Image 1 (cartoon, rainbow, N blue to C red):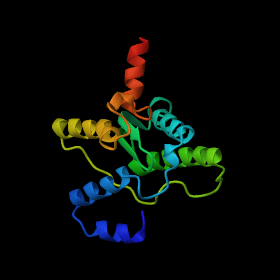
Image 2 (image 1 turned 60 degrees about the vertical axis):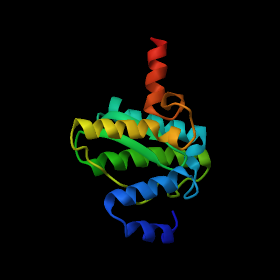
Image 3 (image 1 turned 135 degrees about the vertical axis):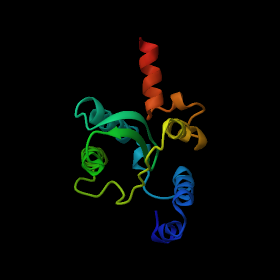
Amino acid sequence: MSPGVLNEVEKLSGRERLIRIEKLLDAAKHGPKWLADERVASVVCETIEQGDKEFHNYQLHSYVVMPNHVHLLVTPKGDISNFMAKVQGVSARNANLILGRTGEKFWATWSYDHFSRGPENFAKMQNYIAKNPVWAKLAAKPEEFHWSSAYRRAKAKAEN
């Protein structure tokens, strides 16, 4: 996102800021769209899933890899900054190799963390993440968007 846009949204309250940034990102008019490359989206999905299944850094609940940002809902098993640095480091290295940009910055230096305030809030967050590609007009249903936990769960269920 451009510095002018960041300065504008920094003046807003927490919730207003999140909504404004989300609308800008979903419109995909700001920032690089490297995640729209299926190869890159795939390695990011794999890295997110590895953090749960192989490295046990967190319990993964939901995720979606949008063209220029990622939503991730997890229960951490340790310090958030540690597992995020691992996820970002591994995925950035692999994505940059795919894109022929080795050694360059991949992820933005800023992110927004939110804590669930109970089961109802948790369910809203999960729903928000699942429906993000639908609202951005990238899929008709959450389970149709390949770069999401909704798709991966639907696919696994169909295979069983």
